[in-house]
Each structure stands twice: as structure tokens, then as C-alpha cells.
Amino acid sequence: MYKSTTADVKRERKKSMYLRELSAFIDTIAEEQPAVREVYLSRLELSADGGICYLYFAAIAPVNAEQPSAEERYVHALDILKLYRPSLRKALAHGLQARYTPELMFLFDEKREKLDRINELLDKVGQELGNREN
Image 1 (cartoon, helix red, strand yellow):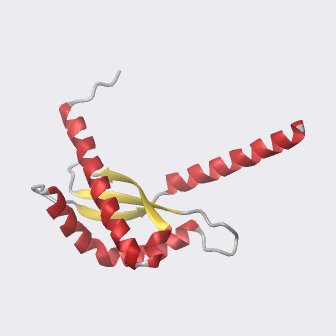
Image 2 (cartoon, helix red, strand yellow):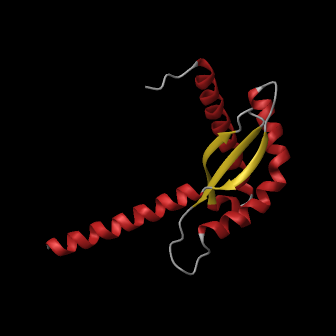
Image 3 (tube, rainbow, N blue to C red):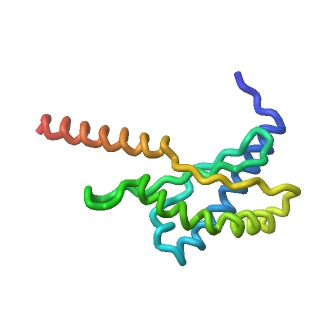
């Protein structure tokens, strides 16, 4: 059985604080930038040394086929988020008052995209099974 060490607990606490702070800052950016409203921060990972913070973004699923795909909306929002990277990092440094502030890397969350597709397929199967029973 896995036992968590003090270092693991501190790392998870730091990730949680980063996620909370960065989500709030990104929400503020989304008020001004409509493209950023289309994406949300789904998860966050830290590099082994804590020097890089990987921010994984997912996009709200398109309602119909005419809308751009989730990844296309992420790419559009990424251009805007890159402009705000220094401000995000500075706000994170001031908000947490940590000794070091990690570099921020923006990535598309493919895991979330796969999970959404699996859930969509399961919903379809459930509907078909429900229709057969009636």
C-alpha cells in the first residue's frame, strides 16, 4: 500500500493552491476576452523540481457541427493566454508569496477530451438500450 510522505502532501497542497489562484486569474481574463470563456483550466501538474507548472485546458464541447472543435477553440484562446503569461506568473507570485514561482506552460487536455467522447458514447448506448426496452 502506498504511504504518502510529507513531501507528497506539501506538493499536492501547492498544486491545489496554484490551481485555485490561477483559476481565479483566468476567470478575470475571461471577463475581458471572449475567446478565453470557451476554455477552462481542467488540471494542473508540476515538474519534478517544481520549476514548471503545466496548465491543462479543456474546451466546452461544441453544440453542433458548425461550431469549431474543442481543440480549435483552445488554440484560439492560447494566443490570448500567452499574452497574459507574465501577468499570471506575477499575480501568482504575489498571491502565494512563495520563494520561487514556476514557469507556466499551457497545454490542451487530451485526457478530458477522451473522457468526454467516452461519456458521449455511453450516453448514446444507454439511450439505445432504453429505446429497445420500450
